[in-house]
Image 1 (cartoon, rainbow, N blue to C red):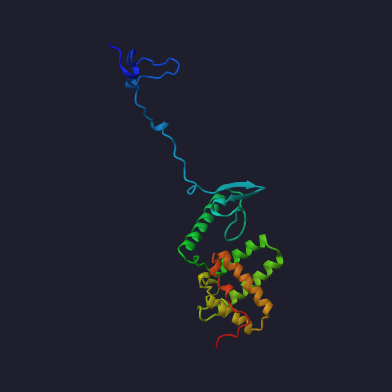
Image 2 (image 1 turned 180 degrees about the vertical axis):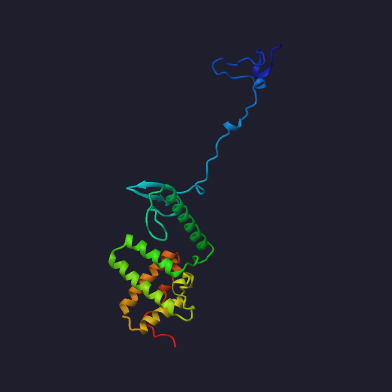
Length: 225
């Protein structure tokens, strides 16, 4: 064998350039390869990972801060009850993420929230309000929604659908008829204002926000002929 020139001058190919550093001649260095089990693992996108669920004082909670909410107790969307099952808690958390994303998509596309049966939505909202609001507030809210449900059952223009009326039909025109009927039945102005506040809160909970028809109805207006 003959000595090489250049970086390895005076040394045989494959010999160490520096015993301390362990550097090798470029010509003799084997190419670097990755075995399948050595390939760097790609991190999963946080957008695709589920919310973190955790047990706190006997109830399961989920961390929704990535979706603009806080850490909340997980509850059955229909009954409001909690669960001791981790699997059930995770399913409820994923359902809540789907709902949040649907609402965001609707806002971005200038669409209203998906309609739901009025009776089902009103019962669920009331159960949640009972947990987080004083009894006086929830009592007023329930009175407003009960009156709205009775009107939906009697309103000919919307088909007398009652609790089966979808919430996307709670438009300004519908709500104006509702408040006109209350005024015609002799409801006082402060009661009408309280009902409007409660129904507006219900519509905000449904996701209507500034498209809330209750915000623009006129009170104490004579009913349409």
